[in-house]
Image (cartoon, one colour):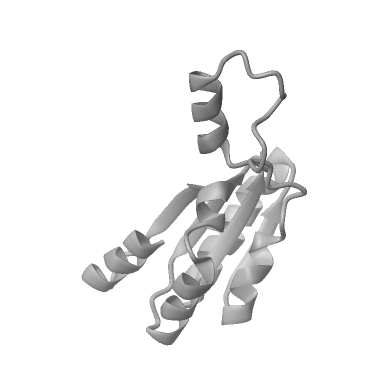
Length: 127
């Protein structure tokens, strides 16, 4: 999220689009980033690819411990999926949740329109 803010500062005429997983969004201090975006008028779009888990940890644990008996390492599930799209609303941003593929194109259009109006925007895509 910091990179998106930096791009917006360096290139004010460009609209950064950040693609991130839900685990990364969760642990990237989104409240701080959304506050900076609001207070400094630095709108950007965040698209969260939400699979309900911190897959980075799961993948590494499974790689190093392939015979692990548990179906998933502890503390890697982020489910049920939080309403990440509501966090940005606390900072006068636009948020939307998408759960079906057919919902994605119109949701992207609404998200882009909000950013064009000067709002930061979050699209929480459940995958």
